[in-house]
Length: 156
Ligand SMILES: Cc1cc2nc3c(=O)[nH]c(=O)nc-3n(C[C@H](O)[C@H](O)[C@H](O)COP(=O)(O)OP(=O)(O)OC[C@H]3O[C@@H](n4cnc5c(N)ncnc54)[C@H](O)[C@@H]3O)c2cc1C
Image 1: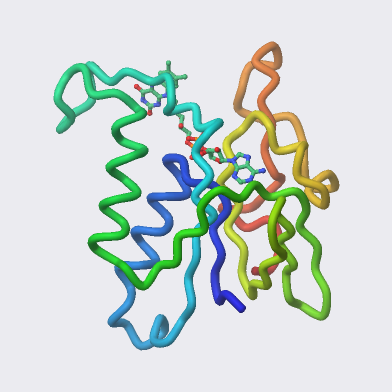
Image 2 (image 1 turned 90 degrees about the vertical axis):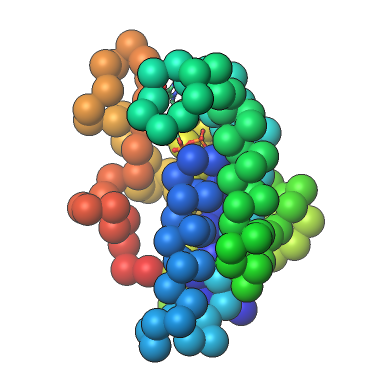
């Protein structure tokens, strides 16, 4: 059982894992089991090239950030469990606990963070009721979001 399970190993997912990992010495994070389904295949960063980002050497690729991000997380916060080679197919909730079904296993979690980008969410069953066109993107870009208030879709 995870206390917090992050889905997606792109920019948002890895950053979230770093922040949760960094709380390890705080009382509220004591003995908490945190995991990340670190799927990166469809990250938008895979094809990104950074030339004008403060602090990044021009020519830095998104691919390198993805690879190094995983290593950074492992080195700094080894207590965060990496789940490799799994893709989420369905999320459901029973008695207040989430069942996160992948192509290989079903993981149980008290809290789920969904960080799968803004394009291909519809492949995860169970998210349809929350999915809407992204309110801040041009309609022709066909971007979506999970309807939320300050990033909270529903409790946990
Ligand atoms: C050419 C290019 C240049 C860009 N340049 C910049 C830039 O200069 N600055 C900038 O800020 N942004 C830039 N971007 C945009 C940036 O890449 C995105 O804003 C960023 O990647 C979004 O992060 P994210 O974590 O929300 O999504 P993503 O990075 O797309 O990550 C989503 C993750 O979820 C995973 N995933 C998807 N479905 C599932 C599933 N069913 N189960 C498990 N995991 C799943 C994916 O594999 C992926 O790793 C650029 C994008 C491109 C394409």
